[in-house]
Image 1 (cartoon, one colour):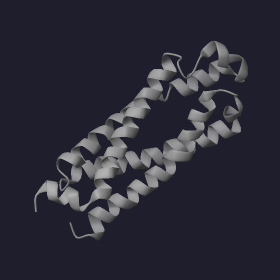
Image 2: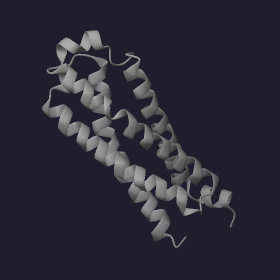
Image 3: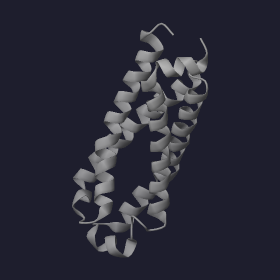
Image 4: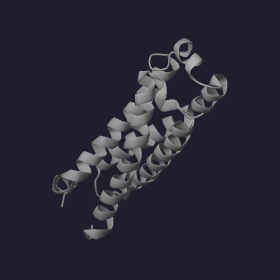
Length: 154
């Protein structure tokens, strides 16, 4: 069976690959918006965030690992679209899915205990979206990839 036919028989994997590509792009855009102050205007948010310098240092430390996660998501998604039967794309997406769970839970634990959802600014909504969306997305991705890899006999 050709790779194209295999992907057509698994529309959820095609959707999943595109979802990882899209989410990877959104993560990169988040950091571009953060550092350009489009979504994180320092002058406006500094008075609203206790220990602003500490928080800014904490949040900025995630730029590199999140960007690496985004590259893995995009690369894994593209690999899965290009050659669905090659396990490298699925393997990359499985790793990225675990990182999505970790990222969302870590962000929720920190942000909820430090009042980051009460800033009265769009940035709070962006943080909440990360915490609410990433863990279920990661879990669903792991479920679909596991099912496709091990439950269908492929």
